Image (cartoon, rainbow, N blue to C red; front, side):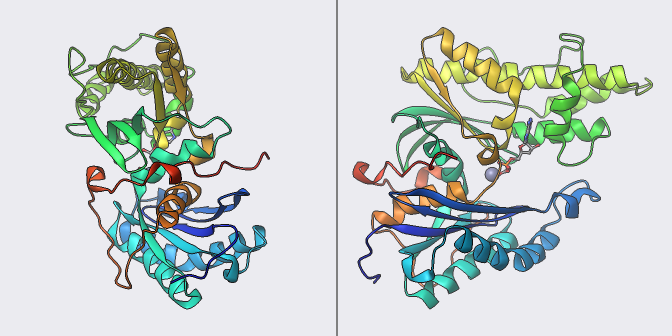
Length: 356
Ligand code: KG4
Ligand code: ZN
């Protein structure tokens, strides 16, 4: 068992996909450090993440990132009350590298370690902002692998209201971007291209818009292929298609998010995950939710995509509540969010970041 410590401070490690990251979070002083290394360049020539290369690169990057984070936070291992790491869902080899390092460090330092659900990290990332969202709220979780509408009652209280039947929103951005010849990861590149496109030039399908909270994005690829077939790929055509894709995804997500607020009677919407960095999505949701008297909460841009600060928020709440893993490592490629345990409310207000 850890000795009683004055300030509850933890180290967190993220390695679920192609970002290696480490962060130090203190319950009273806030976020003291967050370090990140993106493997984007390593995977770009393959047009997507190569799992084996990702794992090998995490092994190279993680320990130096941990050292840098501890240095930046002016923190010695003796000041840490625990170590949090991403236990899933994600690429299993990549997850294991972070888990093995976190588990070993915690063992050596004589403190508990806790495995965090990556999506819980994304969901709780807005708690690092100066004005954190209230509980309960509805969350729109939009990343490369997931697109879900979730009713969030508190930390660990997640009810999935709607899910994608096929591709995730980020996946739809990435796959259509690839058809337009954009480099991986295509989402941000497509969004940039869309800025110069003509609104409404292409009307792409928005399936399941009529009713319910389920989503589907796989039809977009075929629709985009159709609009490119037999045509010269001019700058104007690419920009117009990109605009059409972004409009279809943003339009669908806005309708569904507002419908989820209506269905639950809630006013606060949290938007997180990589796609929440999309400016058109932010503008559309702010407008739509504002019109019905509600408010939208986002993580700052650097915490929309994968990072260790969000893992630290979830990990601190769970370690503080006395939760921790045994010595065995249980990383999970799949892990349903709804199986997580609830964290009592007195522990559910992790500290916010110190002003920059
Ligand atoms: O949450 P994240 O970093 O990783 C996963 O857990 O999946 O999300 C990555 C996804 C990618 O599909 C990427 O293209 C997308 O988020 N993304 C964006 C933007 N920034 C990142 N999609 C659209 N517009 C953006 N600005
Ligand atoms: Zn993620």
